[in-house]
Image (cartoon, rainbow, N blue to C red):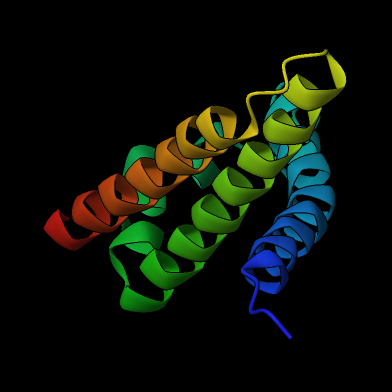
Length: 115
C-alpha cells in the first residue's frame, strides 16, 4: 500500500475547522458586542492586559496553535474551492495554498518567539 500525506492534511483541516468554529464566534461576541455594548470595560482588553496574556509562554502556545490550524484549514478549504471552480492544476494549487500556510506558520513562530 502506498503512503499518503492525506491523514496529516485532513487532521490539520479538521483541527482548524473545529478550533475556528468554537473560537471565532466567541471572539466576535466579545470584541464585536460585549465591549461596544458596555458589558465589558474597554480596559479589560487594554494593550497591557492582552500583551501579558500573549507574552506568557502558555498564551504564546495557544495563539500559535490557533493561528497554525486556522491557516492550514483555510489552505485546504481554498485548495478544494479552486478545484471546484474548475482550475484543475492541483499540484500548483497545492503548492501555493500549503506554501502560504507553511509560511504563515513559520512567521507566527518567529513573531511569537521574538516577543
